[in-house]
Amino acid sequence: GAASDLADAIRSIGALQPQLLRSLADRVGVGVLTLLRANASCLRTRWDWEAVLSVLQNLAGMGPAAARPALEALTFVVRDEGRVHVTASNLDLLLQALLAFADSVLEPSSAKTRTVADRAPGPNGEPPLTGPPSEAEVRR
Image (tube, rainbow, N blue to C red; front, side):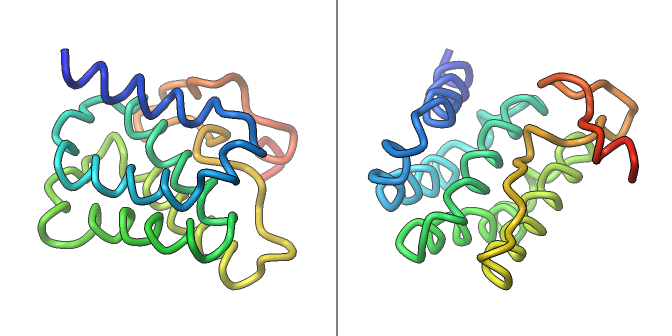
């Protein structure tokens, strides 16, 4: 269905080679923002939100042309019209993306390169979808 297609499309964006994503970053950022505004309700699972937030976080470090729509997309989700999409299952992912975005803006030379996909287990203790935590996460 439409929800599955949207999530698959966003996961495909996240799988692009970094150089290709960088060359398309401004257009991808605007596209993800547009998708969220029109179809955020199609993102129903933690895995769907992880894909979206990982792409936005990656875009944040790719210069102002990509960072602006990425920030607008994150802002949409946490403001009035998009807030209905924030749930207990995606809140920690959203906070991680916002913090990483702030890091990339405030300290671009030392911005974290880890994405939402590299996160710790979810709020209910579910394991990470992308593998075990790194050594750095274990030491925290």
